[in-house]
Length: 296
Image 1: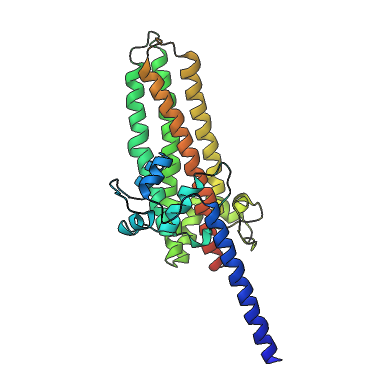
Image 2 (image 1 turned 180 degrees about the horizontal axis):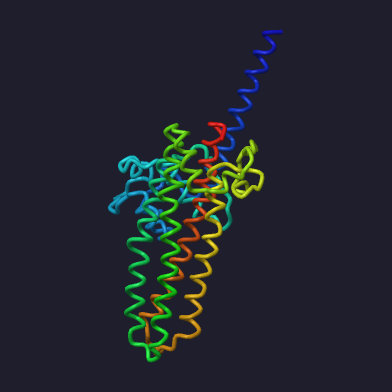
């Protein structure tokens, strides 16, 4: 009987390993970018990856080195880099990487650098160009209105990102070091709704569709739900700003600067949407798996 059990266990392990390897091979076939690809080829294929390498702390000047080599040289987890790069190629929220294998510290560094980019470079640059573009408008009374709407939009974005930096990312950092007591304290201070929540569901988080699962009251999802309303407010402010410029901002046909600024605003909007999707579909599920290990 004992021998039979050993045989059965060995068979089950072989089946698991076979299935795991098959899934891994299938995912490698589905994913567009691979570790042995040249980094320069990725950038030529999708220029949006320029922002990605910057947020991973990877400088230009790759030569003909592969993605694996560049990541190793810059102490970036290659699997996590490729998860983000390949996710950007999907038109939906399908993930062909194992979120449990993602490096949380690498993701945290990526997200923090992205916040620095938006708050310290992207939005101030757009405002400077916007101020210059509308300074020569004939209907000067619309100028303060446009700037006010932009400043309100930038303020909403700053509040949202600074909340994540101070609370959500601090929670995850403490979680990763096993400081559960401090992690719980941060959640209680940042998410008042936690006091009203029941014990979290033990339903495993296996796909991005679980991110907003109403039965899962884990800490990382409390942060996510609390910020969902802020996302709507940000979207509303940006929509109003674009409508004012497009509908009510009379300019000369050759006002290239204002058109360029509006183009930058649309690009910034798309980039922020992708940033939020990366958080929701890669970062949050990965953190949720860590929480489950601690029984949270």
